[in-house]
Image (tube, rainbow, N blue to C red; front, side, top):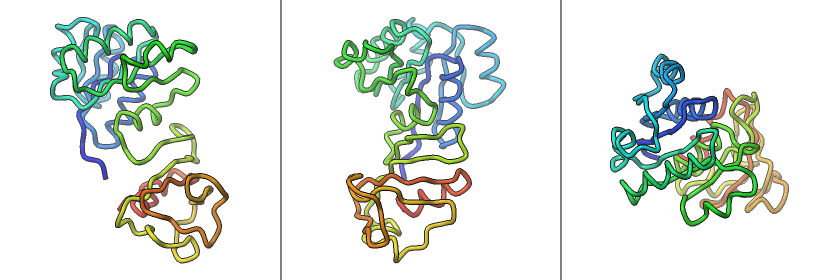
Length: 217
């Protein structure tokens, strides 16, 4: 399991707030920065973490979030240029911080040497952003507000399912392993779940935690 991380979310709109909620639900420490008073008040009311009211492109505001102690920052405002400025300011203060920027279609290449990861509005979900920021062995393919989540999961060494075939294990009702090793074929009873390999798994929301425990220990 991944350890608790300290993550800064810049932008308290729909995407930023949902990402902050997702991170907090996963047990991470969240610092949210939002310049609009009504949005920052709404975030504070939810008690998802520390909320700072101000412009995250301003070094004096960003320093209040103490990026040198943070593992990652997500710039999720509605303006791609603003997100780039936030990431540049953050890395100027804390060179080793991991950065994620929300971009516009066709601008991803411009961010390649500046940010660690980018995400486009059509692909953007709170779960996907949280996956990138957390650095977990799980990537959400479909999720966030669906009853069914499609996950890409890496089997960790020592996990209950590692080295066993699907026929030999009892997965909970509401879980289906879709792909075999490296997603090259459909999973069957004789599919062996190998440590270090990634699999596509369909999971009903109420058994997600149980399934992740089986795959990750």
